[in-house]
Image (cartoon, rainbow, N blue to C red; front, side):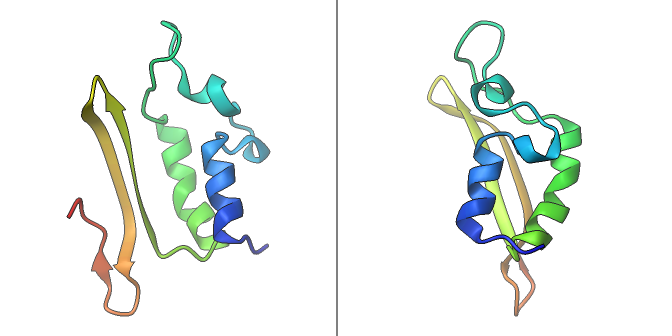
Amino acid sequence: MELRRREFVGMVATGAAGLGFASGSQAMKGKLGGEIHPPDKSFLATLPKLMEIAQLPGLGIGVVQQNKISWTHYAGYANADGKTSITPE
């Protein structure tokens, strides 16, 4: 199976509904209504496979709460040829 990067981003943005995860706002909004939470460990465990399917060498994701970065996750490479890891910079 091969995914275009935009399709991959769409899947991730909707909580990867096709892989059995909650979709859209249900996956992201907290009980207080509107608060965004980091994805759970089971979702993060699927990222390497999703990245492989999408032929995505690396990605960085984050959660901002109250105008501050509260959580980040980096996976893969910024430069696949040189094997440069993804970093906050």
